[in-house]
Length: 315
Image (tube, rainbow, N blue to C red; front, side, top):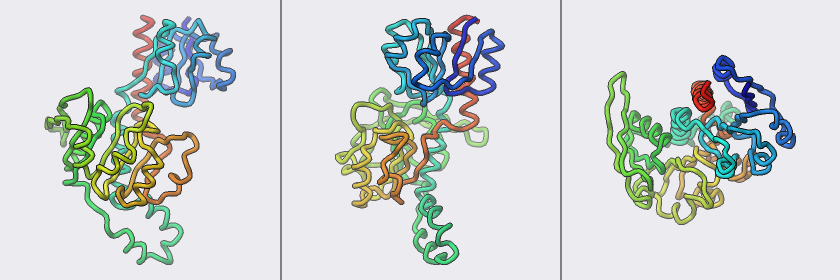
């Protein structure tokens, strides 16, 4: 019997589907330092972002046939090395797009109406400084009619564009691999196709009122001082992609200079201990890497993993 270790957990539906297909599934959470030894008893390892699967673990477990990542990014797995060793490596890129797109807009709506700062101040001063706070937060803006620039118009970028179009925003995008996309906007059961042609990266920076980033992490930031300098004064920036795609030091400087009016961050350069200057900045809307953390996304992630595992082993 094929044995699966879901070290960071899986949904009930995923576990049931795998067990019904004849797999043995363990939900034990094995500490990282003991993983190399315990994993020798399993054929498949399923992880989220917590468990790291590096070269040492792969070498220690020659019995391993598959590594599955519940989610999109596989920064915590030495993917190429695993594949060189003949191990199948899978993820679930389609499952969480809608959830991440909605979180982008949670940040955008919150920033546009100063909700993060208001939520910090109201419990402290709402009963004594109500009129002052009302005046302080009285210069919000509408998103409708504004231009949203999307850096990376893959699955998540397209899901974000879909929401933006529904809100009434103008959407522009840049992507080195995609020339144009058609976004099917569902309005009350009616499907409205909207074509978007990608533009040059620097042009997007200059034209956007808000910018959201949906690219994989790399060796260097996508957005730093040079890019901030190209943006409109008062721009809003959101990163729900990968920590490190925005230079956080340059972001804080851009906020202090008034170039960036506010930012929304779900991911950070240093997780799980983000920089204090980020955490304490009242112009930054913060969430703790929860882009895919909705019940619906978790169900889709689980079932996508189960389907791929069952198909691979031919059960």
